[in-house]
Image (cartoon, rainbow, N blue to C red):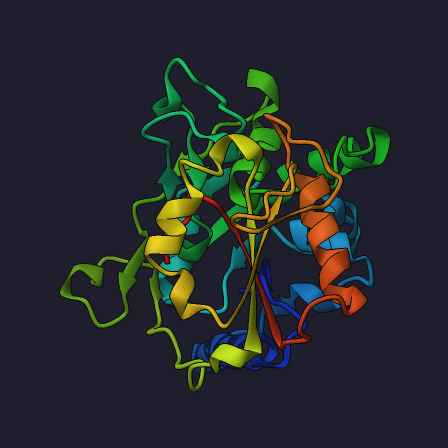
Amino acid sequence: LREIVFIIQSQSNSFHVKQAERRRADLLEQAQSLTENPPVVQLLHTLSDNEGDWSILPLLPVLSSSFGKNSSWIVFLEEETNVKMIKLLQVLTRFDRNKEWFLGKPLHDEESTIIHHYAFAENPSIFKYPDFAAAWALSIPLVARLANKVRNEPLKSDFTIDLKHEVALYIWENGKGLHLSAVPEFCTEPEDSPRARHCVTTLSRMPLCGNPVNKDDVFVAVKTCRKFHSERVPVIKKTWEKDALFLEYYSDYADPSIPTINLGIPNTERGHCGKTFAILKRFLSGSVPQTKWLLVVDDDTLI
């Protein structure tokens, strides 16, 4: 166990910290029952002050320098991921720790998708990426090589849409790196499911997040553009608009019949960050009701 480093993909929010601490306590308790030296269990958000390190790739040099000499594996898991320690040890012995390994439960796209930038459009299912909820693991030799790559070749973008897909792409290196190796025992079955008997990892029941928020605690920002004013906006108006107490439509054209607000950001076919940032600025400027929550949706979103 002392050769395994567990990284819980935590967030600094107090609710998530509590969930992550509970997961860490469970891992350490299992280790104690095995009379083993306790493994290293770290909360991701505590490893660095760099906010971008939640995306893991920028953190690889830190992981390599901190754990590269005395560890064999880095296992990443989410707050709700249960781990059966004995079974994990048995599974990892199938893989030579001195070689490069990228392990996980494989996911694939049934069709090309915008959030993956239409990668592998001719055959989307050919590329596999890990289901983070089932845990995923990197061998230290792979961590060391990737860490050197990050040091020598700065990451091209600090913008992340689907982290698990982008991590897999980075490791794949346009076909020159590693594919994900499937581990059938990495599962996302509920912990009490009969189908989870062979599993190393399972999922806890999602905790209750508290009472529903009030309508007056939510401001809804709908992103649209002129060409969809007559096609998509009427669907929202006929369905869920009435359920939102505070709502504004943001567009590239001011249409008083809706009404829409022109934020001064032209419509674009790819990448919509400019409009989103303009919405955030407007929300923080005091020009709209100051609510506890801001909900940003597209004009084809049904709620």
